[in-house]
Length: 261
Image (cartoon, rainbow, N blue to C red; front, side, top):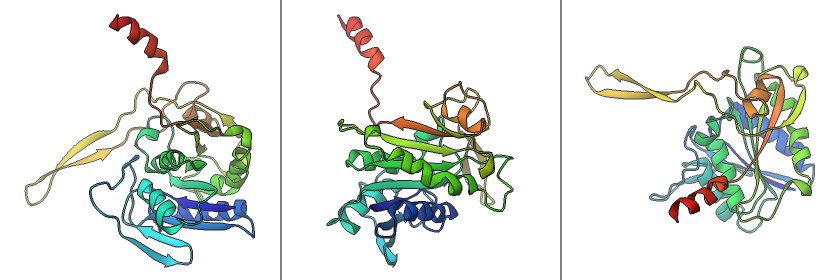
């Protein structure tokens, strides 16, 4: 198996090394793991692509490249430059430092890479490590992802879990904020919503008198509805959420048609 990996925390992020180990275990001794990751951190860029300016790419080691662009740019670079004559069988994105559950999913560059992978017709899985009091001070706060990542990916590689729709499935995986032995298993979930959490901007004036805004997130341990991603994570489960890039609200189509009559 040939696997392309990327992330949004940058080429030197510790979570990318965790993902490398997961990918190498999945690929096996006869497989290949190729890395195309952002040269610098790209958290929060979503599915952004560098459409109006070029992206510089540099080879750092054998099968390891850094691109000055977004995670989606890295996927495009991997498919059309680095691996143009030998497309990957699988794209893995992560392991993100922090959760990409609930509303975080909509901002995530980790998820953006998988959206691009799915649009390009390649099986894609995003992996993120929820942080919290249960794991933030561990010697390896990624230990839940490291211990359970390969098994989770293997479980998702079954042919019955993928389809050939125009907007293809991809999977969003979040590992719970607990030590590896305390992980209770995997749970199929929907995307949650934290009722009391919003991104916001805090103003600050520089020593030169210029005004700057810092974007900040809200509390990450707010409860979400039962059966959703963050709720499962906070209960000790690995959340696995099937997703598509199709943003249509199909439940509203008939209502809208009636309103137009």
